[in-house]
Image (cartoon, rainbow, N blue to C red; front, side, top):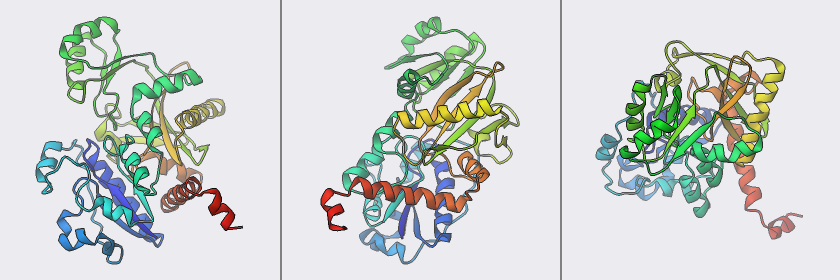
Length: 366
C-alpha cells in the first residue's frame, strides 16, 4: 500500500510532529507498506523538479528516514517561513497535494494548528483523499478548548469552571483580572503540548501571563486551577484504554517535559480505584462520542484529593513519539506500536470505504 505520512507543517508543535511522523513511517515500512514521510509546509522542494512533476516515483524509491532529536525548544516559525523557497501564502508546500492524491491513504502525523484543527481534513474531504484520524468538524471543535467545553459539559462531563474571552486586547486585561480569582490557569484555547499555558498562583503573575497568551491569538481561556494528579485516557476504536498517570520529574508537565524521555514518569495503568478508572474511561469515551471523533483520541484529566475527576482537553491527533501516551496505553492491552499504526490505517480505510460506498456500489457486489 502507498502511504504518505504527513508531518511538520507550520505549527509550534512542528518538531514534535517530525518525531511522530518518522516513527510512524518506520513502523508502516516494517509492516510492508511503501510509506513516504512528507513535510506539509516544506513539501518536496528539496527533492528536485523531476520529483515535484512526478511525486509518485517516491513510492518506488523510498527516501531514507533520518533520526529526529528533540531539543526542548519551540520552533521559530518566522525562520521556518524564511527558509522555504516556495514563497506562497499556502500552507501546503510544493508537491504535497499531488503526492497525497497518489497515496492509498494519508497518515496524518501533524500536531497543533494547520494540521489538527480541521482545515487539512476539510481539504482532503473535498479532494477525495483518504486520511487517518477524525473528520474536519470533530478536529476543529477538539482543537478549540472553549468549544470543546461548551460541547461536553452539558453531556455530564465534569470540567473546571471557566471564563472565555474573544477579541481580547491589552485594554481588556484589567477587567479580566477583576473577573477571575487566583489561583487560575490562563490558556490560549487552540494551543497544544502545553504551549501558551500559564498557571497563576500569585496575582502579580496574572498580567504578564495574559500578555504572553495574547501573542498566540486574541482568544483567551481562564480556568479554575485544580490541584491534583494528572492523568490521560485514550479511546481506540470505540473503547477506552487504561489510563496513564503522569508524574513530572521536575516542574509541571510542560512542552519540554512532555517529549523528554526523562521529563516525567508514566504509570500505566494509573493509580486509581477500579471505580475511578471506569469513570475516567467513560468520560473519555463520552468526549470522543460527543465530538464524533474517529479511530482514536486522548483526553487529559486532573484528579483532586477528594477523587473528583476533571476533564481538561482532548487531543484528536495524539502524539506518536517514543514518549507518547497512546502507544503506552495500547501496549498495556497487548497492541504493539507497529500494530497500532496498522490498526489506525485500516480503520481509516474502512470508514472511508463505508462513507463513499453508494447503494449502487453495494448492489453491484451482490
